[in-house]
Length: 435
Image (tube, rainbow, N blue to C red; front, side, top):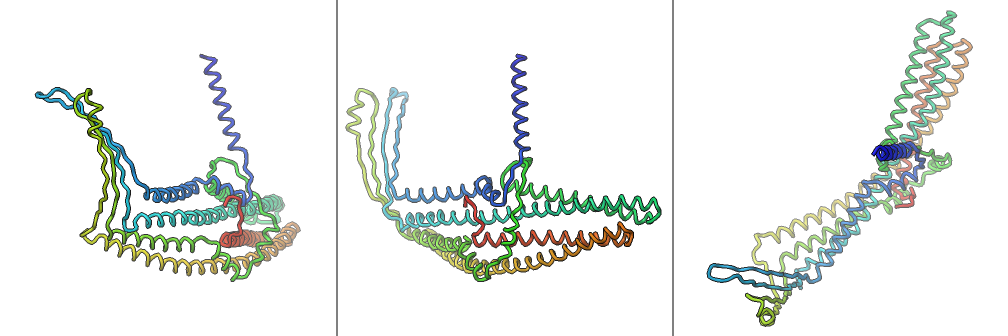
């Protein structure tokens, strides 16, 4: 028993170690790889795919409604009373029915379910676009914080060197204690900024892991895009071309068209309630009464065949059929209005996103120039401070100017990248292998 427990303990230890090694092994992914991974593994997307399968199954089932049904009945009973001895009797039957006419109800349901199954494909594409945009936001947010973190590390190193130099000057009497305290404050601020950026980066990666449906503790490294790709983003197509491509690619208009057609099929289904239902029925039956001795004879004598046609004619249904037709016609008009509104809203959204990209690109280019200018100014200021030609306050002012310009540059850069990539999603140009 001791040996068995030892083996079980060692197996459990190996299993835990393997699990820790798996979670610690980093995944390295580009943006496109993240999108492909999510489209294949996202739990929420798998749920949407199940909705598509359910819609297809409803369509298949509605086609089966044209076929006759078939059912069997078997019954064996034991009868006993004070005046009669116990006796067995049984009955057996096969029954079938086939709807010959139902006012177009079956055909209407087939058409409606077929349209719903086709629409489900566009609903998945709509979901995929939303999922890709969420991945873009989390991915680029993590990248932005990662880049900002590198700059902040450099600033923290500068603050540490300035604090060391300030301590030497304080001991030699070259600066006041208040100047040294300002240098300490700047160092603490830069250190705190690094901590906050690190947490924001981790939170962005955590959000990205959630979208990819991978374990929160799984190590994930994201790959920075090529500089050529960033330069390519600046080449923005004409506004009219973007509008045409986006309208042709986005599934929203297709979904609205299907909504109208589905509502139209609903009107026909509602109208079928005004007409009679004609069905063909048929069946065979047999049975026996007390005693096994006459079993075969009874089965032969009691064998029956029946067939017939039944018609159910609506005469007065408390106005239900009329109300259903009215409600379905209202739903059709609403679908037609929503289709028109979707077309207008879609055009406005695309044009607004396009102009946001133009504005964001201008802000990015401007902030880049400011960042380079303040970076050069801060580098000069550090040399001047080392030579004792500027005060501590002047140095820290230049450092804060550079820090603010740097933060604005990173924010504008990744804001532009996000908006530009969203425009690519609208135009269907963010290619993936699983769409």
